[in-house]
Length: 58
Image (cartoon, rainbow, N blue to C red; front, side, top):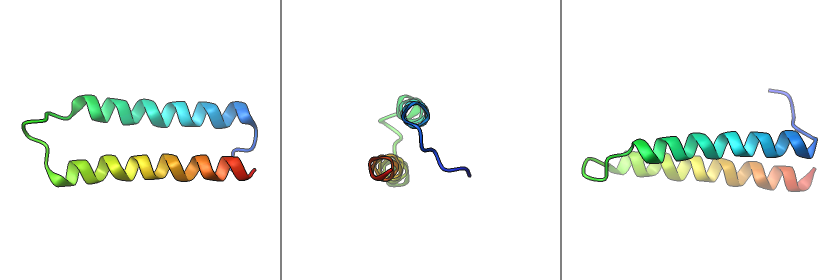
């Protein structure tokens, strides 16, 4: 994957990742949520946070 260096591309990337996160979150049924589902959501948040840190350093 090509590195994202310009701010516009970084913002677009983060928006897309957040949209995916929100879609997954909306699709989860609280009555049927399992620990794996929560772990997957936390992993998505960690990935977004890691990417934000990478972008700040560029």
